[in-house]
Length: 224
Ligand code: DX5
Ligand code: ZN
Image (tube, rainbow, N blue to C red):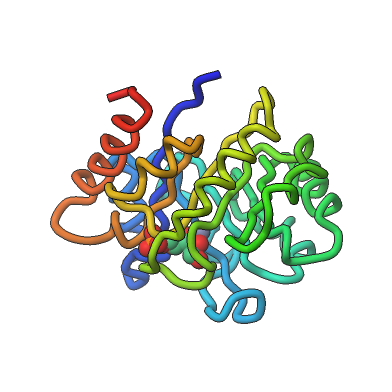
């Protein structure tokens, strides 16, 4: 099954002083999803934004809001993010003891569910929840900050997860250190959604930045 290749700009690297404009800008520049990083200063060593900000930027784009929760516990906040306008809500496998409950809750809220694996978490963590997810997000950096270096061995894990998922209708997303240089490694391993923060929100043209990542990834899978 050929899945569309999607680019998801991460607004973690946006100018927070004009966040709405930045969301509109990456939408118009060709971003497919808007990736929203939620950090609590507990599960990860940084604090970002909550459901009120998601609600505030919701009118700025019709595109899929891909909410990546780096918070523990996550369950008490799932409904708030759903009501704020998330389309996909992803929780870390490492963030709590009741992963099935979190994923079932996300689906019961009418949203697409995602499980996120840190670089140190093995592919086998997907097996018990393979039928409960619409998305598997493989971190290619340790979460917490933008602008870190891509951890290339995660690509082997992406290949294994693609095998585990078989023909299930599940996207595989990678997040961290994605550039036109690293995107081909992830795409050729089987990732079809590429998150990029610092490689998008820089320079004169977000459009050129997104296009460069997309073209490099598509070339690597023979779709240029
Ligand atoms: C890291 C976040 C990423 C981050 C990626 O914890 O989950 O989404 O914004 O930033 P870059 O693309 O700069 O590595
Ligand atoms: Zn993220």
